[in-house]
Length: 180
Image 1 (cartoon, rainbow, N blue to C red):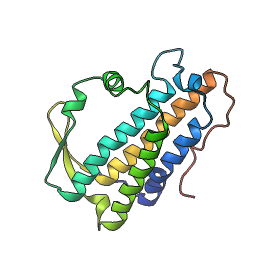
Image 2: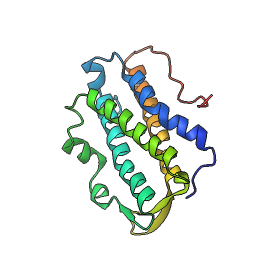
Image 3: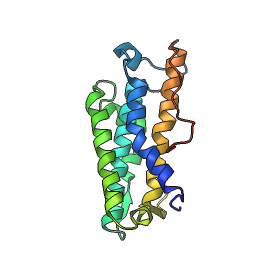
């Protein structure tokens, strides 16, 4: 894996993610947040908590790679169970979004400050042990791009759920170029 060359565009997307997510769920009722898609899947509330917890997990990797490039990051503990199981264990369907949205914003601001303060942070990398036992060196920039895109992917899903429920909100700018 390599760090993306379009660092400014990716960091802008990463920075914008929390505000875009907040906009996507602004003024939704509990009924909206808790409705599940007709084809099955997570509710909007569960999706938001999933985004925030995933970001928190990968934040640890970023800090590890910035501090000790010889370290090995393993998500074996997480991959042992389905995301649905983690969502149940971490009470995604019962928690308020306020704290999670605030945490996402603060966490991303913290990571962006680290990236600005550490020379060559974008290229720092540690190894990730994959579920099959293989290891791969993953640059911080790759993880930043992955997490920036993760939010946009799920905002699109939130919009689809709202559309299915008859919500006529204008679509967000998740498919437009960022940083302009």
